[in-house]
Amino acid sequence: MTAAPVQPFAIAARIRTAWIARSRQEQLVYKLLLPVFGSVFVIATIPFILATIQAVTSDSGEFIGFDNFARALSNPLLYESLKQTGLYAAIALPVEILGGLGIALLVHRTVRSNVARAAIYIAAMIPIVIPQIAVGVVFRLVYAADSGILNVLLGQTGPNQPLWLSSPPLAMIATASVDIWQWTPFVYLVMFAGFQTVPSESVEAAQVDGATNWTQFRHIELPYLRPLLLLVLFFRIADVIRVFDHVYVLTGGGPGTTTQFLSLYIYRIGFKFSDLGQASALAVVVMVAMILFYRIVSRFLPADRA
Amino acid sequence: MRRRSRGITKIATTLLLAGIAFLFAFPLFYLIATSLKTKADLFAPVPSLFPPAPTIDPYISVLFTRGFGGLLVNSIIVGVSATILSILLAFAICYPITRLPASPRLRAFVLNWALSLRFLPPVAVVIPYFAIVRAIGLYNQLPALILVYTIFNLPLAIWMLRGFLDEIPLEIEEAALVDGASRWYAFWTILLPLSRTGILAVAIIVFAFDWAEFLFAFILTATPQAMTFPVGVQGLVTQFEIIWNDMAAGGVIAILIPLSLMIIARRHVLTGLTFGVIREK
Image (cartoon, rainbow over all chains, first blue to last red; front, top):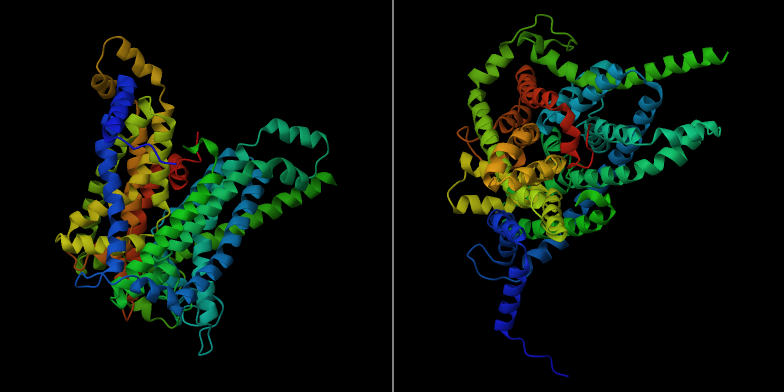
Protein backbone atom coordinates (compact mmCIF):
# COMPACT_ATOMS: atom_id res chain seq x y z
CA MET A 1 0.00 0.00 0.00
CA THR A 2 1.61 3.24 -1.05
CA ALA A 3 0.27 6.63 -0.17
CA ALA A 4 -0.42 8.84 -3.14
CA PRO A 5 2.50 11.23 -3.59
CA VAL A 6 1.53 14.67 -2.40
CA GLN A 7 2.07 17.40 -4.92
CA PRO A 8 3.02 20.68 -3.29
CA PHE A 9 1.53 22.54 -6.23
CA ALA A 10 -1.73 20.63 -5.89
CA ILE A 11 -1.99 21.78 -2.27
CA ALA A 12 -1.25 25.38 -3.21
CA ALA A 13 -3.87 25.19 -5.93
CA ARG A 14 -6.40 23.73 -3.54
CA ILE A 15 -5.80 26.50 -1.01
CA ARG A 16 -6.18 29.01 -3.84
CA THR A 17 -9.51 27.56 -4.93
CA ALA A 18 -10.74 27.49 -1.35
CA TRP A 19 -9.69 31.11 -0.94
CA ILE A 20 -11.49 32.24 -4.09
CA ALA A 21 -14.56 30.24 -3.08
CA ARG A 22 -14.86 32.35 0.05
CA SER A 23 -16.97 35.44 -0.19
CA ARG A 24 -15.19 38.78 -0.21
CA GLN A 25 -16.41 39.34 3.33
CA GLU A 26 -14.93 36.08 4.53
CA GLN A 27 -11.65 37.07 2.89
CA LEU A 28 -11.84 40.35 4.76
CA VAL A 29 -12.08 38.43 8.06
CA TYR A 30 -8.71 36.86 7.42
CA LYS A 31 -7.16 40.02 6.02
CA LEU A 32 -8.12 41.97 9.11
CA LEU A 33 -7.56 39.26 11.69
CA LEU A 34 -4.31 37.70 10.54
CA PRO A 35 -1.84 40.58 10.99
CA VAL A 36 -2.97 41.55 14.49
CA PHE A 37 -3.98 38.18 15.89
CA GLY A 38 -0.97 36.55 14.24
CA SER A 39 1.50 38.91 15.90
CA VAL A 40 -0.23 38.72 19.27
CA PHE A 41 -0.28 34.94 19.01
CA VAL A 42 3.44 34.89 18.28
CA ILE A 43 4.29 37.35 21.07
CA ALA A 44 2.26 35.34 23.56
CA THR A 45 3.75 32.03 22.41
CA ILE A 46 7.39 33.16 22.40
CA PRO A 47 7.73 32.92 26.22
CA PHE A 48 6.65 29.29 26.10
CA ILE A 49 9.20 28.45 23.39
CA LEU A 50 11.87 30.50 25.09
CA ALA A 51 11.24 28.80 28.44
CA THR A 52 11.64 25.44 26.73
CA ILE A 53 14.92 26.59 25.14
CA GLN A 54 16.16 28.00 28.47
CA ALA A 55 15.32 24.71 30.12
CA VAL A 56 17.30 22.52 27.73
CA THR A 57 20.39 24.72 27.35
CA SER A 58 23.11 25.78 29.77
CA ASP A 59 23.94 29.40 30.54
CA SER A 60 26.53 29.40 27.75
CA GLY A 61 23.92 28.13 25.31
CA GLU A 62 24.92 24.48 24.82
CA PHE A 63 22.27 21.81 24.67
CA ILE A 64 22.19 19.92 27.96
CA GLY A 65 19.20 17.65 27.41
CA PHE A 66 16.58 17.17 30.03
CA ASP A 67 18.85 17.68 32.98
CA ASN A 68 16.89 20.68 34.27
CA PHE A 69 13.61 18.81 33.99
CA ALA A 70 15.10 15.89 35.92
CA ARG A 71 16.38 18.23 38.63
CA ALA A 72 13.07 20.11 38.78
CA LEU A 73 10.97 16.98 39.04
CA SER A 74 13.21 15.18 41.52
CA ASN A 75 13.33 18.09 43.96
CA PRO A 76 11.38 17.04 47.06
CA LEU A 77 10.59 20.69 47.76
CA LEU A 78 8.40 20.74 44.63
CA TYR A 79 6.16 18.04 46.06
CA GLU A 80 6.20 19.76 49.43
CA SER A 81 4.96 22.98 47.76
CA LEU A 82 2.29 21.08 45.81
CA LYS A 83 1.11 19.52 49.05
CA GLN A 84 0.93 22.89 50.78
CA THR A 85 -0.86 24.43 47.78
CA GLY A 86 -3.37 21.58 47.92
CA LEU A 87 -3.87 22.10 51.64
CA TYR A 88 -4.41 25.83 51.09
CA ALA A 89 -7.00 25.07 48.42
CA ALA A 90 -8.63 22.44 50.61
CA ILE A 91 -9.08 25.01 53.39
CA ALA A 92 -10.01 28.06 51.32
CA LEU A 93 -12.12 26.76 48.41
CA PRO A 94 -14.85 24.86 50.32
CA VAL A 95 -15.35 27.78 52.71
CA GLU A 96 -15.48 30.27 49.84
CA ILE A 97 -17.86 28.25 47.70
CA LEU A 98 -20.21 27.01 50.42
CA GLY A 99 -20.06 30.34 52.25
CA GLY A 100 -20.70 32.38 49.10
CA LEU A 101 -23.53 30.06 48.09
CA GLY A 102 -25.03 30.17 51.58
CA ILE A 103 -24.96 33.96 51.79
CA ALA A 104 -26.43 34.23 48.29
CA LEU A 105 -29.27 31.92 49.29
CA LEU A 106 -29.84 33.89 52.48
CA VAL A 107 -29.92 37.25 50.73
CA HIS A 108 -32.02 35.90 47.86
CA ARG A 109 -34.66 34.52 50.24
CA THR A 110 -34.76 37.21 52.92
CA VAL A 111 -33.62 40.55 51.49
CA ARG A 112 -36.42 41.93 49.34
CA SER A 113 -35.61 45.62 49.09
CA ASN A 114 -33.74 46.61 45.94
CA VAL A 115 -31.79 49.29 47.76
CA ALA A 116 -30.50 46.78 50.29
CA ARG A 117 -29.59 44.36 47.50
CA ALA A 118 -27.69 47.07 45.63
CA ALA A 119 -25.88 48.05 48.81
CA ILE A 120 -24.83 44.44 49.42
CA TYR A 121 -23.69 44.22 45.77
CA ILE A 122 -21.34 47.20 46.19
CA ALA A 123 -20.14 46.01 49.58
CA ALA A 124 -19.34 42.56 48.20
CA MET A 125 -17.36 44.11 45.37
CA ILE A 126 -14.98 45.96 47.69
CA PRO A 127 -12.72 43.07 48.81
CA ILE A 128 -12.52 41.73 45.25
CA VAL A 129 -11.20 44.92 43.67
CA ILE A 130 -8.53 45.57 46.29
CA PRO A 131 -5.04 44.92 44.90
CA GLN A 132 -3.55 41.78 46.46
CA ILE A 133 -0.59 43.72 47.80
CA ALA A 134 -2.95 46.01 49.70
CA VAL A 135 -4.79 42.95 51.01
CA GLY A 136 -1.41 41.86 52.38
CA VAL A 137 -1.09 45.25 54.10
CA VAL A 138 -4.57 44.91 55.62
CA PHE A 139 -3.88 41.50 57.08
CA ARG A 140 -0.42 42.39 58.29
CA LEU A 141 -2.21 44.84 60.57
CA VAL A 142 -4.58 42.09 61.67
CA TYR A 143 -2.18 39.19 62.20
CA ALA A 144 1.12 40.80 63.22
CA ALA A 145 2.54 39.73 66.56
CA ASP A 146 2.49 42.29 69.44
CA SER A 147 0.77 45.10 67.58
CA GLY A 148 -1.63 43.07 65.42
CA ILE A 149 -5.22 43.96 66.18
CA LEU A 150 -6.40 40.34 66.34
CA ASN A 151 -4.23 39.41 69.30
CA VAL A 152 -5.09 42.73 70.97
CA LEU A 153 -8.81 41.97 70.65
CA LEU A 154 -8.22 38.41 71.87
CA GLY A 155 -6.37 39.83 74.87
CA GLN A 156 -3.30 37.78 73.87
CA THR A 157 -0.33 40.12 73.73
CA GLY A 158 1.95 38.38 76.20
CA PRO A 159 4.91 36.11 75.48
CA ASN A 160 2.59 33.17 74.75
CA GLN A 161 0.52 34.95 72.12
CA PRO A 162 -0.41 33.00 68.98
CA LEU A 163 2.08 33.79 66.20
CA TRP A 164 -0.29 33.91 63.26
CA LEU A 165 2.37 34.53 60.63
CA SER A 166 5.32 32.61 61.98
CA SER A 167 4.14 29.33 63.47
CA PRO A 168 3.44 26.53 60.98
CA PRO A 169 -0.23 25.57 61.27
CA LEU A 170 -1.33 29.13 62.05
CA ALA A 171 0.50 30.66 59.05
CA MET A 172 -1.42 28.30 56.77
CA ILE A 173 -4.72 29.24 58.40
CA ALA A 174 -3.87 32.95 58.29
CA THR A 175 -2.96 33.01 54.58
CA ALA A 176 -5.96 30.85 53.65
CA SER A 177 -8.26 33.10 55.70
CA VAL A 178 -7.08 36.07 53.63
CA ASP A 179 -8.07 34.19 50.49
CA ILE A 180 -11.48 33.48 52.06
CA TRP A 181 -11.91 37.14 53.01
CA GLN A 182 -11.16 38.30 49.50
CA TRP A 183 -12.97 35.68 47.40
CA THR A 184 -16.08 34.58 49.29
CA PRO A 185 -17.77 37.82 48.12
CA PHE A 186 -16.88 36.90 44.53
CA VAL A 187 -18.63 33.53 44.88
CA TYR A 188 -21.54 35.34 46.50
CA LEU A 189 -21.89 37.75 43.56
CA VAL A 190 -21.77 34.98 40.97
CA MET A 191 -24.25 32.82 42.88
CA PHE A 192 -26.58 35.71 43.59
CA ALA A 193 -26.62 36.54 39.87
CA GLY A 194 -27.34 32.84 39.29
CA PHE A 195 -30.38 32.87 41.59
CA GLN A 196 -31.83 35.72 39.52
CA THR A 197 -31.79 33.49 36.42
CA VAL A 198 -34.10 30.86 37.97
CA PRO A 199 -37.50 31.34 36.30
CA SER A 200 -40.03 32.50 38.88
CA GLU A 201 -42.72 30.22 37.35
CA SER A 202 -40.84 27.05 38.36
CA VAL A 203 -40.32 28.41 41.87
CA GLU A 204 -43.98 29.33 42.20
CA ALA A 205 -45.09 25.94 40.87
CA ALA A 206 -42.88 24.21 43.43
CA GLN A 207 -44.28 26.36 46.23
CA VAL A 208 -47.86 25.53 45.19
CA ASP A 209 -46.88 21.88 45.37
CA GLY A 210 -45.75 22.51 48.93
CA ALA A 211 -41.99 22.31 48.43
CA THR A 212 -39.96 23.12 51.51
CA ASN A 213 -37.15 25.65 51.40
CA TRP A 214 -34.65 22.84 51.07
CA THR A 215 -36.38 20.91 48.26
CA GLN A 216 -36.93 24.17 46.40
CA PHE A 217 -33.20 24.87 46.60
CA ARG A 218 -32.10 21.31 45.89
CA HIS A 219 -34.40 20.51 42.96
CA ILE A 220 -35.33 23.86 41.41
CA GLU A 221 -32.50 26.31 42.02
CA LEU A 222 -29.38 24.17 42.29
CA PRO A 223 -29.63 22.84 38.70
CA TYR A 224 -29.48 26.43 37.46
CA LEU A 225 -26.46 27.18 39.63
CA ARG A 226 -24.46 24.05 38.77
CA PRO A 227 -22.66 25.46 35.68
CA LEU A 228 -21.80 28.59 37.64
CA LEU A 229 -20.45 26.54 40.54
CA LEU A 230 -18.18 24.67 38.12
CA LEU A 231 -17.06 27.94 36.56
CA VAL A 232 -16.24 29.44 39.95
CA LEU A 233 -14.39 26.29 40.96
CA PHE A 234 -12.23 26.36 37.81
CA PHE A 235 -11.42 30.04 38.16
CA ARG A 236 -10.57 29.61 41.82
CA ILE A 237 -8.30 26.63 41.11
CA ALA A 238 -6.46 28.66 38.47
CA ASP A 239 -6.15 31.48 41.02
CA VAL A 240 -4.78 29.24 43.76
CA ILE A 241 -2.02 28.13 41.38
CA ARG A 242 -1.07 31.79 40.94
CA VAL A 243 -1.37 32.85 44.61
CA PHE A 244 1.67 34.98 45.30
CA ASP A 245 1.28 38.61 46.34
CA HIS A 246 -0.45 38.49 49.71
CA VAL A 247 1.49 35.45 50.87
CA TYR A 248 4.78 37.01 49.81
CA VAL A 249 4.20 40.09 51.97
CA LEU A 250 2.62 38.22 54.89
CA THR A 251 4.90 35.24 55.42
CA GLY A 252 7.37 35.27 52.50
CA GLY A 253 6.57 31.57 52.09
CA GLY A 254 7.55 30.68 55.65
CA PRO A 255 7.82 29.57 58.31
CA GLY A 256 9.96 26.86 56.76
CA THR A 257 7.96 25.68 53.77
CA THR A 258 4.50 26.02 55.36
CA THR A 259 3.22 28.66 52.94
CA GLN A 260 5.68 28.09 50.10
CA PHE A 261 2.93 27.54 47.54
CA LEU A 262 3.67 26.63 43.93
CA SER A 263 4.12 30.19 42.62
CA LEU A 264 6.32 31.17 45.57
CA TYR A 265 8.37 28.02 45.10
CA ILE A 266 9.02 28.72 41.41
CA TYR A 267 9.89 32.33 42.27
CA ARG A 268 12.32 31.12 44.89
CA ILE A 269 14.07 28.66 42.57
CA GLY A 270 14.32 31.25 39.78
CA PHE A 271 15.06 34.48 41.59
CA LYS A 272 16.32 33.64 45.09
CA PHE A 273 18.56 30.75 44.04
CA SER A 274 19.02 32.24 40.54
CA ASP A 275 18.58 28.77 39.08
CA LEU A 276 16.80 29.94 35.95
CA GLY A 277 17.38 26.61 34.19
CA GLN A 278 15.44 24.66 36.78
CA ALA A 279 12.85 27.44 37.08
CA SER A 280 12.31 27.39 33.29
CA ALA A 281 11.78 23.65 33.39
CA LEU A 282 9.22 24.17 36.16
CA ALA A 283 7.58 26.95 34.17
CA VAL A 284 7.25 24.69 31.13
CA VAL A 285 5.79 21.85 33.21
CA VAL A 286 3.30 24.20 34.89
CA MET A 287 2.28 25.83 31.60
CA VAL A 288 1.68 22.45 29.96
CA ALA A 289 -0.27 21.26 33.00
CA MET A 290 -2.44 24.35 33.05
CA ILE A 291 -3.14 24.15 29.32
CA LEU A 292 -4.23 20.53 29.77
CA PHE A 293 -6.35 21.63 32.74
CA TYR A 294 -7.91 24.30 30.55
CA ARG A 295 -8.70 21.74 27.83
CA ILE A 296 -10.66 19.70 30.36
CA VAL A 297 -12.28 22.80 31.85
CA SER A 298 -13.41 24.22 28.53
CA ARG A 299 -15.59 21.16 27.95
CA PHE A 300 -17.61 21.91 31.05
CA LEU A 301 -18.08 25.60 30.49
CA PRO A 302 -21.46 26.88 29.31
CA ALA A 303 -21.84 26.11 25.62
CA ASP A 304 -22.58 29.63 24.36
CA ARG A 305 -19.15 30.83 25.39
CA ALA A 306 -17.41 30.58 22.06
CA MET B 1 -47.79 32.73 65.93
CA ARG B 2 -46.66 32.33 62.38
CA ARG B 3 -46.21 36.04 62.04
CA ARG B 4 -44.07 36.13 65.17
CA SER B 5 -41.74 33.36 64.01
CA ARG B 6 -41.33 35.21 60.74
CA GLY B 7 -40.30 38.31 62.66
CA ILE B 8 -37.74 36.30 64.58
CA THR B 9 -36.32 34.82 61.36
CA LYS B 10 -36.02 38.30 59.97
CA ILE B 11 -34.12 39.57 62.99
CA ALA B 12 -31.90 36.48 63.00
CA THR B 13 -30.95 36.82 59.33
CA THR B 14 -30.35 40.55 59.70
CA LEU B 15 -28.05 39.87 62.65
CA LEU B 16 -26.26 37.12 60.72
CA LEU B 17 -25.72 39.34 57.68
CA ALA B 18 -24.58 42.20 59.91
CA GLY B 19 -22.12 39.87 61.61
CA ILE B 20 -20.69 38.75 58.27
CA ALA B 21 -20.50 42.37 57.08
CA PHE B 22 -18.63 43.28 60.26
CA LEU B 23 -16.06 40.51 59.74
CA PHE B 24 -15.42 41.77 56.22
CA ALA B 25 -15.45 45.49 57.03
CA PHE B 26 -13.43 45.49 60.23
CA PRO B 27 -9.96 44.86 58.68
CA LEU B 28 -10.55 47.73 56.23
CA PHE B 29 -11.74 50.01 58.99
CA TYR B 30 -8.60 49.26 60.97
CA LEU B 31 -6.44 49.93 57.89
CA ILE B 32 -7.92 53.41 57.52
CA ALA B 33 -7.71 54.04 61.27
CA THR B 34 -4.02 53.10 61.31
CA SER B 35 -3.28 55.27 58.27
CA LEU B 36 -4.50 58.30 60.26
CA LYS B 37 -2.35 57.71 63.35
CA THR B 38 0.63 59.82 64.38
CA LYS B 39 4.10 58.40 64.92
CA ALA B 40 3.60 58.72 68.67
CA ASP B 41 0.42 56.62 68.55
CA LEU B 42 2.45 53.73 67.15
CA PHE B 43 4.36 53.42 70.40
CA ALA B 44 1.24 53.01 72.53
CA PRO B 45 1.55 49.71 74.46
CA VAL B 46 -1.89 48.66 73.20
CA PRO B 47 -2.84 49.93 69.73
CA SER B 48 -6.09 51.90 69.74
CA LEU B 49 -9.02 51.17 67.43
CA PHE B 50 -9.56 54.84 66.65
CA PRO B 51 -6.72 57.27 65.93
CA PRO B 52 -6.52 59.48 69.07
CA ALA B 53 -5.38 62.50 67.02
CA PRO B 54 -6.16 61.87 63.33
CA THR B 55 -3.52 63.20 60.95
CA ILE B 56 -2.75 62.94 57.25
CA ASP B 57 1.00 62.99 57.91
CA PRO B 58 1.45 59.31 56.92
CA TYR B 59 0.04 60.09 53.46
CA ILE B 60 2.41 63.02 53.04
CA SER B 61 5.26 60.91 54.31
CA VAL B 62 4.51 58.12 51.81
CA LEU B 63 3.89 60.31 48.78
CA PHE B 64 6.58 62.95 49.29
CA THR B 65 9.18 62.02 51.91
CA ARG B 66 9.48 58.48 50.60
CA GLY B 67 8.96 59.63 47.01
CA PHE B 68 6.12 57.22 46.25
CA GLY B 69 4.50 60.01 44.25
CA GLY B 70 6.92 59.05 41.47
CA LEU B 71 5.83 55.41 41.69
CA LEU B 72 2.23 56.56 41.43
CA VAL B 73 3.09 58.41 38.22
CA ASN B 74 4.84 55.27 36.87
CA SER B 75 1.77 53.18 37.69
CA ILE B 76 -0.48 55.61 35.88
CA ILE B 77 1.77 55.84 32.80
CA VAL B 78 2.04 52.05 32.57
CA GLY B 79 -1.66 51.50 33.29
CA VAL B 80 -2.95 54.06 30.81
CA SER B 81 -0.58 53.04 27.98
CA ALA B 82 -1.17 49.32 28.45
CA THR B 83 -4.93 49.84 28.65
CA ILE B 84 -5.01 51.83 25.40
CA LEU B 85 -2.86 49.24 23.62
CA SER B 86 -4.93 46.32 24.97
CA ILE B 87 -8.13 47.93 23.76
CA LEU B 88 -6.78 48.77 20.30
CA LEU B 89 -5.55 45.20 19.84
CA ALA B 90 -8.74 43.73 21.30
CA PHE B 91 -10.83 45.83 18.94
CA ALA B 92 -8.76 44.77 15.95
CA ILE B 93 -9.26 41.13 16.95
CA CYS B 94 -12.93 41.37 17.96
CA TYR B 95 -14.11 43.36 14.94
CA PRO B 96 -13.63 40.61 12.34
CA ILE B 97 -14.98 37.85 14.60
CA THR B 98 -18.11 39.73 15.64
CA ARG B 99 -19.02 42.03 12.73
CA LEU B 100 -17.97 39.91 9.75
CA PRO B 101 -19.04 36.39 8.76
CA ALA B 102 -16.11 34.62 10.46
CA SER B 103 -16.49 30.87 10.64
CA PRO B 104 -17.61 29.62 14.07
CA ARG B 105 -14.48 27.51 14.28
CA LEU B 106 -12.19 30.49 13.79
CA ARG B 107 -14.16 32.48 16.33
CA ALA B 108 -14.01 29.66 18.86
CA PHE B 109 -10.28 29.23 18.25
CA VAL B 110 -9.49 32.90 18.91
CA LEU B 111 -11.67 33.09 22.02
CA ASN B 112 -10.47 29.79 23.46
CA TRP B 113 -6.88 30.71 22.88
CA ALA B 114 -7.41 33.98 24.72
CA LEU B 115 -9.14 32.30 27.66
CA SER B 116 -6.47 29.63 27.96
CA LEU B 117 -3.90 32.39 28.61
CA ARG B 118 -5.90 33.32 31.71
CA PHE B 119 -4.99 29.93 33.17
CA LEU B 120 -1.23 30.46 32.94
CA PRO B 121 0.28 31.47 36.27
CA PRO B 122 2.21 34.78 35.96
CA VAL B 123 5.25 33.34 37.72
CA ALA B 124 5.69 30.77 34.93
CA VAL B 125 5.35 33.46 32.26
CA VAL B 126 7.65 35.94 33.95
CA ILE B 127 10.70 33.66 33.80
CA PRO B 128 11.03 33.79 29.99
CA TYR B 129 9.87 37.45 29.94
CA PHE B 130 12.68 38.27 32.36
CA ALA B 131 15.18 36.81 29.87
CA ILE B 132 13.61 38.62 26.90
CA VAL B 133 13.44 41.96 28.68
CA ARG B 134 17.07 41.76 29.76
CA ALA B 135 18.20 40.62 26.31
CA ILE B 136 16.58 43.59 24.55
CA GLY B 137 17.76 46.07 27.18
CA LEU B 138 14.37 46.95 28.60
CA TYR B 139 15.07 45.73 32.14
CA ASN B 140 13.94 48.35 34.68
CA GLN B 141 12.20 50.38 31.95
CA LEU B 142 8.55 51.33 31.77
CA PRO B 143 8.08 50.10 28.15
CA ALA B 144 8.81 46.55 29.30
CA LEU B 145 5.95 46.70 31.78
CA ILE B 146 3.64 48.32 29.24
CA LEU B 147 4.34 45.53 26.77
CA VAL B 148 3.89 42.72 29.29
CA TYR B 149 0.70 44.20 30.77
CA THR B 150 -0.76 44.74 27.30
CA ILE B 151 -0.34 41.09 26.42
CA PHE B 152 -1.32 39.78 29.83
CA ASN B 153 -4.65 41.57 30.06
CA LEU B 154 -5.47 41.29 26.36
CA PRO B 155 -7.55 38.10 26.84
CA LEU B 156 -9.77 39.91 29.34
CA ALA B 157 -10.16 42.85 26.97
CA ILE B 158 -11.00 40.52 24.06
CA TRP B 159 -13.65 38.61 26.02
CA MET B 160 -15.32 41.67 27.48
CA LEU B 161 -15.28 43.65 24.24
CA ARG B 162 -16.62 40.70 22.28
CA GLY B 163 -19.56 40.58 24.71
CA PHE B 164 -20.34 44.25 24.14
CA LEU B 165 -19.96 44.04 20.35
CA ASP B 166 -22.23 40.99 20.19
CA GLU B 167 -24.99 43.07 21.76
CA ILE B 168 -24.94 45.70 19.00
CA PRO B 169 -27.27 44.47 16.21
CA LEU B 170 -25.51 43.85 12.90
CA GLU B 171 -28.49 45.29 11.01
CA ILE B 172 -27.64 48.89 11.87
CA GLU B 173 -24.28 48.70 10.10
CA GLU B 174 -25.68 46.59 7.28
CA ALA B 175 -28.32 49.21 6.56
CA ALA B 176 -25.58 51.79 6.14
CA LEU B 177 -23.56 49.44 3.90
CA VAL B 178 -26.59 48.82 1.69
CA ASP B 179 -26.99 52.58 1.39
CA GLY B 180 -23.52 52.65 -0.12
CA ALA B 181 -21.41 53.64 2.87
CA SER B 182 -17.92 52.15 3.05
CA ARG B 183 -17.14 49.66 5.80
CA TRP B 184 -14.66 52.11 7.26
CA TYR B 185 -17.31 54.84 7.31
CA ALA B 186 -19.85 52.51 8.93
CA PHE B 187 -17.27 51.50 11.54
CA TRP B 188 -16.32 55.08 12.30
CA THR B 189 -19.77 56.66 12.40
CA ILE B 190 -21.98 53.79 13.61
CA LEU B 191 -20.14 51.03 15.44
CA LEU B 192 -17.65 53.16 17.34
CA PRO B 193 -20.19 55.58 18.84
CA LEU B 194 -22.48 52.66 19.75
CA SER B 195 -19.72 50.76 21.53
CA ARG B 196 -18.44 53.75 23.48
CA THR B 197 -19.92 52.63 26.83
CA GLY B 198 -18.56 49.13 26.34
CA ILE B 199 -15.09 50.38 25.50
CA LEU B 200 -15.11 52.61 28.57
CA ALA B 201 -16.14 49.71 30.82
CA VAL B 202 -13.40 47.48 29.38
CA ALA B 203 -10.87 50.28 29.79
CA ILE B 204 -11.76 50.80 33.45
CA ILE B 205 -11.57 47.11 34.33
CA VAL B 206 -8.34 46.53 32.40
CA PHE B 207 -6.75 49.62 33.97
CA ALA B 208 -7.72 48.40 37.45
CA PHE B 209 -6.09 45.03 36.72
CA ASP B 210 -2.95 46.71 35.36
CA TRP B 211 -2.86 48.96 38.41
CA ALA B 212 -3.02 46.05 40.86
CA GLU B 213 -0.42 43.89 39.11
CA PHE B 214 2.55 43.10 41.31
CA LEU B 215 4.67 40.11 40.28
CA PHE B 216 5.75 41.32 36.81
CA ALA B 217 6.62 44.78 38.11
CA PHE B 218 8.44 43.26 41.08
CA ILE B 219 10.66 41.12 38.87
CA LEU B 220 11.12 43.39 35.85
CA THR B 221 12.03 46.58 37.73
CA ALA B 222 14.75 47.41 40.24
CA THR B 223 14.75 51.13 41.00
CA PRO B 224 12.13 53.85 41.63
CA GLN B 225 12.73 54.98 38.04
CA ALA B 226 10.47 52.16 36.81
CA MET B 227 8.88 50.67 39.94
CA THR B 228 5.11 50.76 40.21
CA PHE B 229 3.13 51.67 43.29
CA PRO B 230 2.36 48.11 44.48
CA VAL B 231 6.10 47.32 44.41
CA GLY B 232 6.70 50.31 46.66
CA VAL B 233 3.94 49.20 49.03
CA GLN B 234 5.51 45.75 49.16
CA GLY B 235 8.71 47.40 50.42
CA LEU B 236 6.76 49.03 53.25
CA VAL B 237 5.38 45.67 54.40
CA THR B 238 8.52 43.56 54.18
CA GLN B 239 11.11 45.99 55.54
CA PHE B 240 12.77 45.01 58.82
CA GLU B 241 11.03 47.54 61.02
CA ILE B 242 7.56 48.28 59.71
CA ILE B 243 6.33 51.87 60.05
CA TRP B 244 2.70 50.90 60.53
CA ASN B 245 0.98 54.19 59.73
CA ASP B 246 3.00 54.73 56.53
CA MET B 247 2.34 51.16 55.44
CA ALA B 248 -1.39 51.59 56.05
CA ALA B 249 -1.44 54.89 54.14
CA GLY B 250 0.32 53.17 51.20
CA GLY B 251 -2.35 50.46 51.32
CA VAL B 252 -5.17 52.99 51.33
CA ILE B 253 -3.74 54.83 48.30
CA ALA B 254 -3.29 51.52 46.44
CA ILE B 255 -6.93 50.65 47.14
CA LEU B 256 -8.48 54.03 46.41
CA ILE B 257 -7.89 54.14 42.67
CA PRO B 258 -9.24 50.70 41.65
CA LEU B 259 -12.07 51.00 44.16
CA SER B 260 -13.36 54.30 42.83
CA LEU B 261 -13.00 53.10 39.22
CA MET B 262 -14.85 49.89 39.99
CA ILE B 263 -17.68 51.77 41.66
CA ILE B 264 -18.06 53.82 38.48
CA ALA B 265 -18.07 50.64 36.36
CA ARG B 266 -19.89 48.52 38.97
CA ARG B 267 -22.32 47.02 36.49
CA HIS B 268 -19.45 45.49 34.55
CA VAL B 269 -17.10 44.29 37.28
CA LEU B 270 -18.63 40.85 37.58
CA THR B 271 -18.65 40.50 33.79
CA GLY B 272 -14.94 41.29 33.81
CA LEU B 273 -14.09 38.90 36.62
CA THR B 274 -15.93 36.00 34.99
CA PHE B 275 -14.69 36.75 31.46
CA GLY B 276 -18.14 37.70 30.27
CA VAL B 277 -19.96 34.61 31.50
CA ILE B 278 -22.10 36.64 33.89
CA ARG B 279 -23.72 39.55 32.11
CA GLU B 280 -25.45 42.16 34.22
CA LYS B 281 -28.48 43.86 32.82
